[in-house]
Length: 119
Image (cartoon, rainbow, N blue to C red; front, side):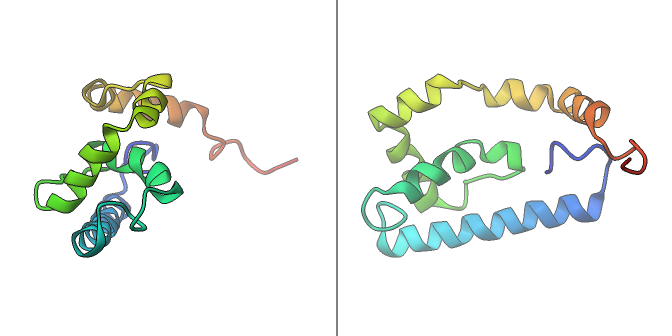
């Protein structure tokens, strides 16, 4: 949402960033108390959440104050299947961030919001 919404909506963008931060904090706390994985043992929860945390900068987040979540990200990221999965659809976060405005423009040009009433 933060990078794809066609126009600048400060309230919605702040809400997205803050809610994402809150959810990352919940994960950090759970990992701190029960780690090393989201559900205790490595599970589909780790597989599903890993890309969202790996690309935290895309969501306007930092893991600097979330050491358990950062440790989890590093641990899960070293698993051979995760390495293979991430290589399958490789993305460079710095490139993504550098091209964020062009991504937004593509989304804006392809949205149906201005298409008028359905026929």
